[in-house]
Length: 502
Picture 1 (cartoon, rainbow, N blue to C red):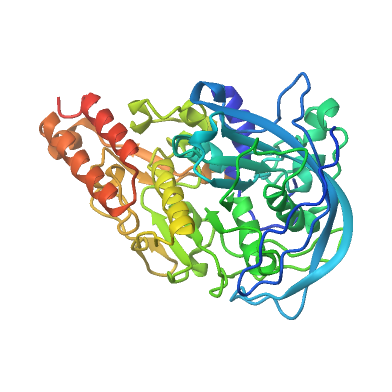
Picture 2: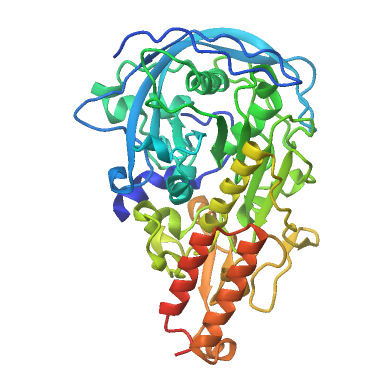
């Protein structure tokens, strides 16, 4: 399992706003309109063809979890979608305020795929579909939001859809990280994916819109297996988060397809509106999410994203449509990404343990902080926001000072401010989104430096003292809305089972 994750989930670990990132059945008829919002044009009627579910000897090629979804009451299906997509051109300057005006430009035929994870029992469906823009930083399709948050999505009864929106994910080519092979779908499984065709990333935004529209349609082929979506939320992590920023600022006002957005671990700037072989239309190096957005947008940031990936300059205040959580003790990617997340079914307290791991050839142990735990709470809060209008809790930003900017650290070396958790408020280690040396891959994984026995005994003279500290922090996080109760129980159980203080 570890070999599988390290080989495939490297896609999660690169993040760049470089526009050169790359990634049969009967006709279903035109997709239904998604419904216009107050400040958006009416959603266009989209003529698409769906095929599926696709069945060949091999299953869908995607870097995600590694266990049988049937064991947790879910099922996986894959569909092909084809049609004609538009590129976009700007009308006026693409400003740093994100208030971009665009119009449709050239059109091109396309055929891509999307993967659906849905409850096998329809009564479990909570009405929400999360549509993830699959990440292609490592040269193949990966679902980092599914990997990091699948436990919450499964126990909450969500449908998850992963979309192959980008050129490299379909056709192959070069990923972002030097030396990593790019394994597009057509290379990975020519028999299954040989009919796919991607015209270029200028068309990716409209392709992503058309998948969202297809999920609302009725027809001979139903990707949701009879489930009726009440809301559809767009999501993208790392490289895909850059795409989310450009989509929100440029495309959402035209299409009105998505009811909310999760922008997870963005860096500074955004992706180009258009690129080769279409005309180059680059985004500014620093840009915020437009403040007049008409649906909820949740910005979820790790320490690495602020300083290493330069999103600090793109901080923006909370509004009734925009909410930011910056999470203390977290890295862009971590041990959950490559060690134990792929097999986590949500019932093992050891998932909460601090793991000292020197994997990936890094000089120091990679981060073992609370990223995935807080992300699950963020998804729950975003869903409540979209479904019921309940605003997520506000959180202080991480404390940064100086020139060049640096985090303010407490006596244990953990950053102050931000969303808090037992990992930083009842610590057994210093967790940072920074601190690695060497290659880009390692630098995105941050560090975890465990406390020695002397320091642990000073902090927690008895086992009960440690359990009490963890319990108090976890209870505070649950009360604040930053930790799900089920995850709090796991964290407490892990503390109880530990040897700390004994």
